[in-house]
Length: 270
Image 1 (cartoon, rainbow, N blue to C red):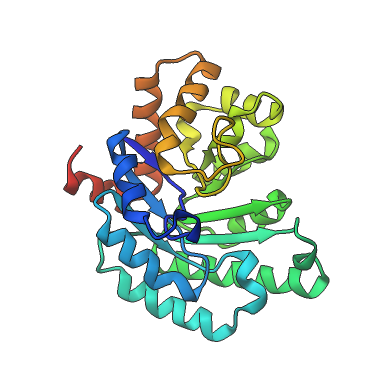
Image 2: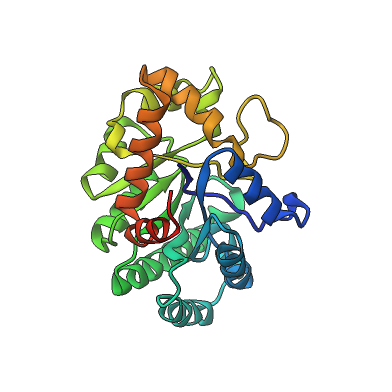
C-alpha cells in the first residue's frame, strides 16, 4: 500500500466529502493517510476523521501560520490532549509544527520569536511522550535543524522538503525522513527533482499536502490523496526504479519514523 504522510483531510476545499476523498484514495491503493492538525480549533476534527476513515490517522500540533493567534493556554491544552490521545491507536505524531519565515506577517522580530517559542515547546511535548514530529519548514531549514538538534524528538518528517543536500543530510543524521509530493512533478522544479532523484531511498516518504501542492496534471486544482500513486510514478522514473520498489521502501520508511503508524497499519492489514 501507499502512505500519504501529510494530508489536511479536514480542509474545507474537500466540500464536506472528506470521507469520500479518503475512500477514493483507498481505491487507488493509498492504505493510510496521516492528517496533521493546525491549531487547537481543529484537533477534534482531525481526531474524528482519523478514526472515521478506514485508512487514516492523525497528529496534534499548532502550525506556525496559526502561532500569531495562539496562546500559552493552547500549549497547556496540547500537552493534555496528547496525553489523552496516547490511548488512541489512530494518533501517531506531533504536527504540523515548525517555522515559517516566508510569509511577511510571520517575519517580524516578535513573530519570529513567538514561532520559535511555540516550536520549541511542541518539541518538548514530542520528546516528553516519545513521539515523532511532522515539521513545516519554509525558508527556515537551518533554524528548524538547530532546534530539533537541541530538543531531539523521536524522529520526524521534514514535510515538503526543499533544502540543500547538506541540509537534507542534517535531517537524515538525526533520524528524520524527507517528504516529497506534487512539486517534483514539475520539470522546472530542478532542485526538488535532483533531491528526489539522488537522496537515499531510505530517507524518502510520500505525501500530498492535499488540498495544496497539486501535481502538474491537477494544478491549479484541488489536490487529493489519491494522487500519491501518480506522483510516485514520476519519482520512480526519476530514480530509475520500479514502482513496487518505491512503494515498499517509502511505506517501510513511514512505518520506521512513525512506529505507532506501523502498529496501526499492521492491525488493519494490507
